[in-house]
Structure formats: structure tokens, C-alpha cells
Length: 72
Image (cartoon, rainbow, N blue to C red; front, side, top):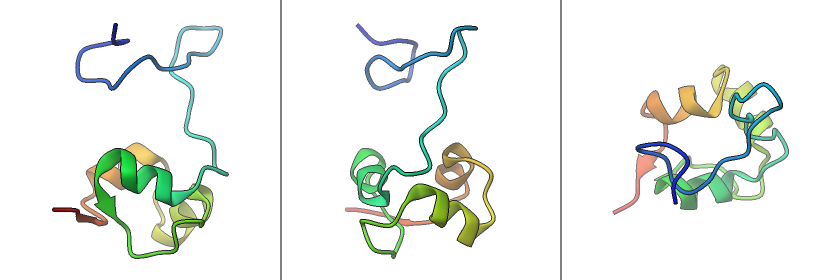
């Protein structure tokens, strides 16, 4: 059963019930597969590095900004 409407699968939560943030050492390739995007960087780059390069504060901001071409 999904965690909430519109979410993929169950998500980890903090003790206060908020969703956990994506770890900065997660690989960009994992995000590209998960969201069907191509960010034009090496797939083994860490998410934290990509966020710094783009000036984004979070993965959510990155996905919603339109950065990365949608894979067809």
C-alpha cells in the first residue's frame, strides 16, 4: 500500500512524521531512473553535487524546475 496519494511506494519518515530528505550521497543515475529524466551528468555523480551545481535547495526543486530532459 502506498504512503500517500501520488507517492511511489512507502517512504521513510522522521520521528516527527515528516518525510526523510533524499541523501546527498545518492547517485544521480538513481534519480534519473526513478523520475525518467536525463540531467546530462554522469550517473555516479552525487545528488548533493548536482544540487550545488544547479543552485537548487532540494531534489523536489530540481525535478519541478524542469531541469533534465524527460526520457522518452
